[in-house]
Length: 138
Image (cartoon, rainbow, N blue to C red; front, side, top):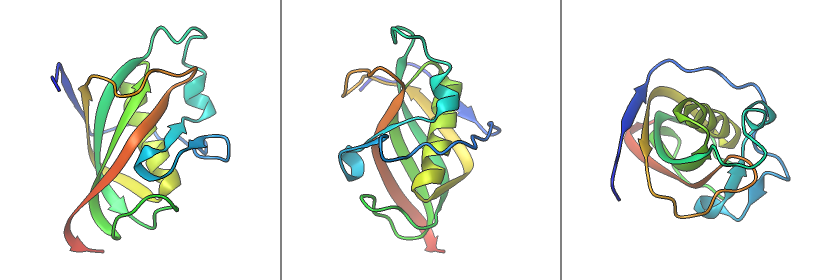
């Protein structure tokens, strides 16, 4: 997979909306497609022509993951493949979705343009969410 650009974000906005609800979850575990919260949905055009595909990594802490996701508590990297309108929205998505599945982003966020494995939907979403622990347990 070719990486066309990279952006590291250390300061990013906080999303207070709940991203994950009964209608936002599709599939299970790493195969889940998680739709984003209303504040991000407002930024997307109706025809979805403005979305781009990214691969995003976020450094943080696993607190207690919801059912369908697995990783020991403590330091970890969260990976996600979102469809978003820009890199800023992709950063907001991993932070917001992470918060709602039991992961607190407290470090670096790395964003890469990447080739998609799933087609875009009618609104931005993230998929292929995975966790890689490192360091000592919490």
